[in-house]
Amino acid sequence: MKNLITIIFIWGVNLSNAQQAISAEEVVKRVLTSNSGLQSINGNTQVNMLLNNPGAAGLTPTVSLNGSLSGAVLNSYQEFSNNTNQDRNGAASNGLSASINADWLVYDGGKMFAVKRRLAAQTATAVLLAKEQAIALVSEALLNYYELVRLQTALKYVLFNLDLAKERFKLVTVRLNTGADSKVEWLLSKNEVSRAEGSVLQVKIQMANTSAKLSALMGEMSGREFIATDSLTTKTYTDIDALRKQMVANNLTLLKVKSQNLILSEQIKEATALRLPQVQMGGAYVFNRSQSQAGFLTMNRQTGLNVALIARWNLYSGGRLQQNSRAMELQLKNNEWLYKEATAQAEALLWLHFRNYELGRILLEGERQSVSDCEELVKIAWQRYSIGKSQLLENIETQRILEEAQSRYITALYNLKVSEINLMKVTGLMIQ
Image 1 (tube, rainbow, N blue to C red):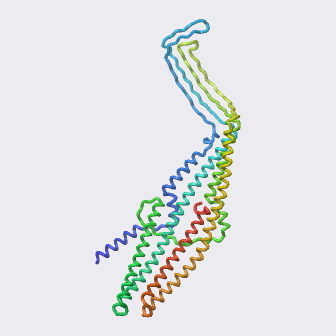
Image 2 (image 1 turned 30 degrees about the vertical axis):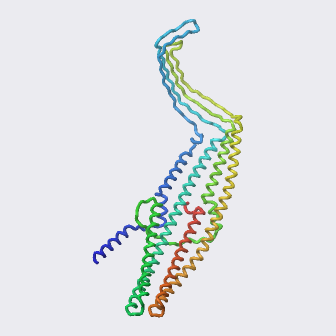
Image 3 (image 1 turned 120 degrees about the vertical axis):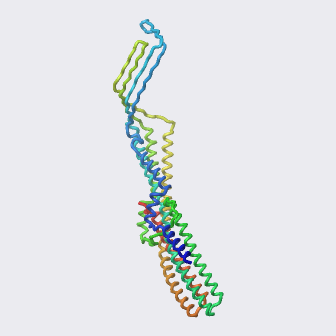
């Protein structure tokens, strides 16, 4: 017996060490910093930021350094205009050239400015996509976290109910020994203890599953179980108009459609700019030298500046540029309809979650009172059974009524928290 107690004690210590207390704030922090999928998306966002630069838009000049070295040994026969001839075998020649070149597109109808704005809009869209993924992951993590809080609350209730079942079993055993109860009552009471123990194990299994989900979302491989330190308290939301303003300003779905519209607008300007003239400046400092053992000129060397101004205007392209512009304009109009549709859907979700939140608060108050009433009912039924004024089935039934009330209360509490998380998600306030 002593060894058994020691084993149980050691197991309890190990279990305690395997658990980790964690807050909702810490869960969010770990998801944002350690989730692999989110880090990959953040990497893509950084790529877009790097590509958003003036050089990529063509706003800056390009400078290059060129050089070449050549040589040849050839048999040469030449006739000159002064009636002299030259016939030479194995004539060597070589050439050396180097230059520093600068080219700058001075004017292209405003295309390069439109490209820069488009790149900025694409970067903003990438940031919105990263935020959208972050909000989805944080929402899922918080739902699992508060599911853990719900299960911890449920565990307190089922442990309380297990204690009641054990106390009732002790009383029934005494009454059986005195002849006040029969074996039937004793077996019923024993079954209630087994049922309560099963409920405790079921809740612990669900807690382990929820902890595993949280570990995965936080990018951790640890097998430890978490203990939630927060409660299922909620904020108070009474003004749906204020929430609607927040939604219009922060809802990521709406912001993404706006960003896509901006990208299309700039692409239309890019297409329009292609129908305008282009002006390009170029300059170079050159060094050229060539030598040859055959020919009238045996050595030639040139150094100096070379400057050019080039203008180009595409007068006709078969209507391709015009058709491209019209196609993008139609797509922009389609996107405006998509924005209206997204706004209507967001409005519907906002109303739904706000209404669920309002009704959930009313429901929660009713369920809280129900639990209080059922607890009083169990006390009365226990006293009646203790003095022999009621049957065992009445006592068991009152406890089951309490368990149902407890379950409804915990569910109402959790659903209210879910409504709050959904409100934060649709208004875009979950991650600022």
